[in-house]
Length: 263
Image (tube, rainbow, N blue to C red; front, side, top):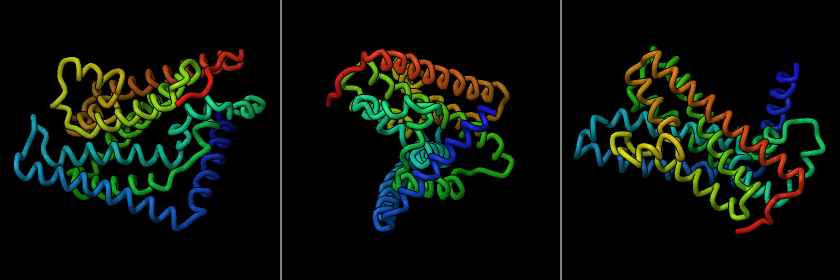
């Protein structure tokens, strides 16, 4: 019953944020279209690249389209229904969560559901077109896609929440959290074959692009229960880390030990 109530409350908050993002129709359309154009340029560059080189470390255009489609859709959905993650560090540093502490609902859920970004719809729309037209997916791939995509979304949100939670300890965490989250996206837009050694270790730990997109892509191209278990385990571990770090920081915040807001 409690979990059902939490989900219902979150859905209500997220729906309100989405409606608010539609309030200024002109701004909504401009932001969405600008993101579509931005994503289109990136896709054209990859098309041009693979037109000349055909493959990179075994990665072909369809594989790259799959990777880009997954990360764009994850960022899109995250921005639409979990948009609060983008400025969570600032909310912590500015003391905006004080009002949330007096309410019985989950503070983390309230923070995540408080914002929705129009540009995220541009990401999501572009991603759907890419996945349908260029990724080489069939109907039989849908269950694997759903599992890999959902796990990737959880890892991405969990990583962003962990970075933002550093604001409970570090005054400059607003910029740090944004930069770290952007780095996750950046690392997720390159074929996995380019990572090795230390860079691969980072891509599968600190900046978990490996579990956001690279492992889901492998799951789709070479489906196996072993890889499925890996993506599910990664999602559970990163979610547990995010929840643990956030609530540990929240306890510190309740004691009045939060840094003063910095740059």
